[in-house]
Length: 153
Length: 220
Image (cartoon, rainbow over the protein chains, first blue to last red):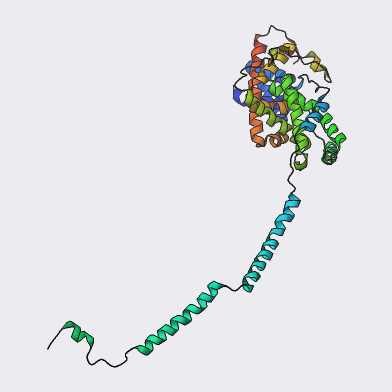
């Protein structure tokens, strides 16, 4: 007896979900299998009991109690996405405006740092020029390295 | 002979209901209190029963169903309507129940549906008044078997219990349960099989031990 197979089909049979051929095979097996008959009896009793469980009504004052709780509950701050969306959309425009104003203000202000940078190269060039004028440009009689090494022929 | 006839339509919302609910949600979002009242009246009993079986305690269930509606009210502005209202409410309720069970896990080890002692030390008899008996079979159901099944449900792990209650008691579809719990449909089916197997085992033991003939046996 292959009871495992039929046990798997037990609830499908109870709920009428087996095909006619499957149901026929299942019933044929039941005729010869007291174990599966008992299983089916338990499944059917379970099914009936589950679907016939008594139902209680909700308490009469339920809606009144809920209204009280709603009134007593702290109001939740709702996020207004449309409002925040508008704010977020404005942010880049405001940023650009602020940057443009800053650059404009910077352009109008005399910058001491910029002046220093402009003067420093000129002074350096003048100094360099003076040094070049004062330098001794007369040709040396002998290469200096002969003297410094002390080499004699 | 053995076969049961089961309705194939399994969904807690019909198409018409969806559009009605969508309108209610829109109105409730616009601070229409009457619309939110209607939403509560549509789902109060279903959510209360579901939560009651999830937590096994009427006082906690009442508190949690109130909390579910409070969260729903506060969450209405962010409810985008992709899930149905029912799916969304069951999701809120399930999360609250799981949080509640986690908090109580260390204190509560067993749950008995016959008699429970609440936090004030008072013993509360669990009784499910049979307020609605649309199916004559309900009336014939063996009371003992009902207790066996209730106790077996209470002893399931939260994961299995959630799926079993949503499918077999609240009658949501696999797809709806998958959306409520945010798990694949295959996981829903697998958990349901495990849950049913555990309950079936308890019922089989009861049927084997019970003096024959019981009403449950005679219902075949």
